[in-house]
Length: 543
Ligand code: G16
Image (cartoon, rainbow, N blue to C red; front, side):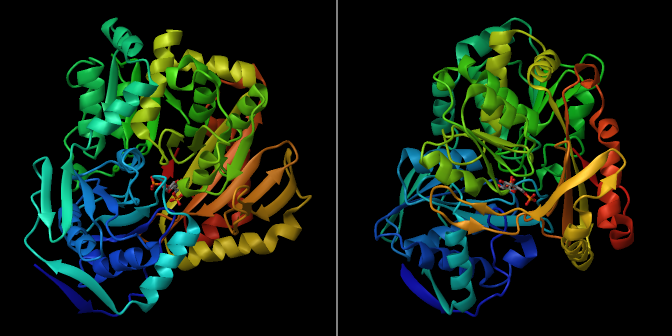
């Protein structure tokens, strides 16, 4: 086997977004495209010779081919061992778990998360650092810088590695160890949650449906929910991971997980419903005909954490992304613990967790997690809920209403406008920036604007500063509208409008969020000149 050094020229578009580099499959299939990016990762991370790397992906189209290329490049870049999930599979939280457990020199995860897959769909790649979390901005910037000057990459000339049986093989001087993608993760879950209590809940007739959306969590959920916890066979639906996710859009929200939503809102609805995304780090939680917003879910988990063995000693603190509602802040205040507000992106939580400042983290984008790994974790959130339900023995809706009665309700919704022309979306954001001075003090019906800004964050641990993280319009009564462009899309631009109003009045807690937020929705559209600039007056997705 010989190492070949291949001459190449840079691609100008290899800037990682909110979570790694995501592009259409045909972009990644261009000669040298994937190789350039992988070599840029290796060139910038400086792994000592003989280091171990974790490698796996969500099984989407091009996963297997990419794994073979990366293995051959790792073997010619000095790695001593690669732990690769069987069949090339590792969910994002499981990869984080394996990196931490075996103290590897980070890992490469192949996924475009919730974006659709298939030959014309999306593919993605990201590097996670040694703490198991997504690379921080200074690392992704370095990777991008290297990608702009790259002139060669190294790859071993060798036959493909067999990925479908467990065990070790050699690739040049490097060992490839094919591992069970589920085992380490399942063991970690058993150490955090009271599996006995959840087993009794399920044995007592509690019914659930978990929608794996033909993505990576199928094998994990079958093993944990059906096999170890004893849920009825078939409780996990769409459990077979498929390269094109069965032509679906593996985004666990009310629009794209409609099959599950119909079951949970239908006759004979189960007591609990949940879904996860392409790579298993997102979650959606549903009760019988009831949707729990991700912001409320974070607050509820925090308020009930001591009911769960892994968190019985309480929480050090909570962190949430800026557009996530302040429901968790109210819980933190009641518990007397700090609550941090970070930019969007799980990478911003890593330092806070490593420094022991926070235990739970969450984002409105269907992400919840804790310091057990350094990624958000879909199945973990589902098990956390099941553990709480097993202890409290009340329906999801009743638990949520009790929570609101105690803390008040942060009524919340996000409106997404997908596939906008990039110029129109940038123009809209620019217009908002230019309106700051004029907006402050302005009255819109019952709402008076208190402040406008573009969110920036100084990391309290390393002092790094991140600017331009989303336009905020804050009102005198504490309500908020936030505008942000998505950093994970691959087609045009996606505008996200986040709406939040605090409702202390218990007699209004049953109101539908869209109704309760109607005035703010109208204000958002007016101040951004939405219709005139985008031609749209209705969101693609409402959550
Ligand atoms: C990624 C990040 C999340 C972030 C989300 C936001 O999620 O890991 O931390 O909240 O993107 O996406 P956008 O920029 O589109 O609003 P995932 O699940 O896609 O990896």
